[in-house]
Image (cartoon, rainbow, N blue to C red; front, side, top):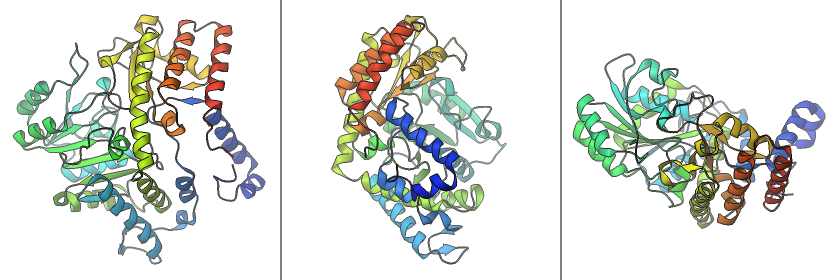
Length: 421
């Protein structure tokens, strides 16, 4: 633990309650098979930047244009993060200040739309794999802006670009939004670009889930097609919790003004330093190997779950995540998540397209392989994970089965230690 927290011994002495909670979290990570698609393991170098004195600096504004003195060194790390983001993704402009994905997305709304106006956004509905910030009525995006939702095809459970085009022609949106949280297939960014051009819309891609795969060459990049790309840095990119916005140069001023001063105040410069570290790591051959392994592992996990009797939504995956229908097993998502938690497997309940069940107890689960791939797990380990999950879910009330599955999980994760040492 001392290798991953600045001055760990001092923390234990001065605040043992917080120290124990942090130590317990590390023990949990070391004993759990992490299959949550939106989680990963940041490197020790990223964690070191997070726990640095960069935390102490207030730096409202942008490098060279701050509202405070003493920013010469946070300017260095922020400029590094910007230049690395541009180089890694071939982007014309990058803003590395958003605190989180939701803030990055709100900045895009702020840059291009007038709240409570007729400005329209065309986006995938939440129940079919969209995100809360993509127009949900309980989120500020849905409260302040007009959304028209598109859905996946009922038969294929994949996007029907002809239907997207029809909706765009009918509603003439100002912004077309692609990129999702529970859609496992490759997105046809070129088709979205053609539709946006036809109706004169801004094309925005929320690449939060798959951006690390893009960086590693394992998934198509949206950057050549989109006017603006938002993404979080803590999922497949393996960085700190935070977000980045990429855009074309013509939108740079609008995006920067929407981030600061419109949406945020002082940037989190220790997080920005950690983003710079993660972006450099993503430029390495090892990262490309990790990205390819992530997709291989996800496909193996999907195949394994299908062999265990689950129905794989859309028939498979092209990315890091798998959406599975529990209907054939006669168990709901809420119970499945709980049972898996008991045996040491972390995943999340999730709705499936056209789900007849409510969001708090949906018909499916969502699993992902960024974490296991970071630890080095391959297809064989994901087939084993699927076997464990299948056994547990077929016998959700059998304590003997749960103990056996828990032991299998413990044996698996012991071979791939989290932050060893």
